[in-house]
Length: 249
Image 1 (cartoon, rainbow, N blue to C red):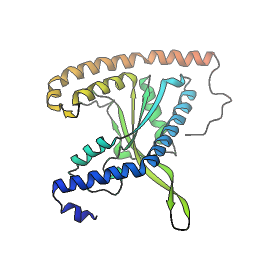
Image 2 (cartoon, helix red, strand yellow):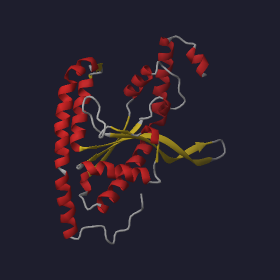
Image 3 (tube, rainbow, N blue to C red):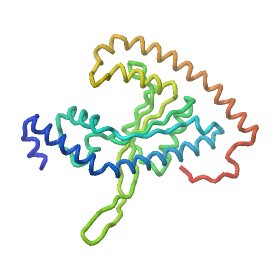
């Protein structure tokens, strides 16, 4: 159904049509979307490995997790878009596939960020970069957010042949410290609980949370001493990356 035909429908009709369309998309493309999620996970873990080896810090000090937005979350975005028609899911949700990079130490958030920007595996949308670490939200929320295209091979089926073609898909990447990660999960619960919006009530305690976040930010800075100790210890133990050949990010 064309965009014009759908826009001429009532809100309830659009809701029904587009909800059914979203369900079909998730069913049809589930395997393909998950394979892209796995690809994103591999690419980011390669960067995490290269970065930790280069900086003589523990491999587990940079952790990568990836996820696919659920059907229910996608439908909520559809509702916020006032039931706008779409040809592919990322037209509504550019965070359909997302990754979170959690670092032990604050400086490594920016180090990993620089590795991602310089990598040929990622095509970062510069306009999408939001540094909530330097410029926290009113609630005290801190993290680096960015959108990036990643390339993947897609199977194009035809009557007589099946060919692979190179495609790009947009993904969201968040980078934060462990302390910021815990705080982010906490404030998310204040905003959204059991599908209800508590943002108005949250504003009453926003100042308290911001003060807590500021204190936690001081702890993040103090942990940098531990990072220096790790680096020095690894150098003394000869556990740098000498003799190890890595694919450049």
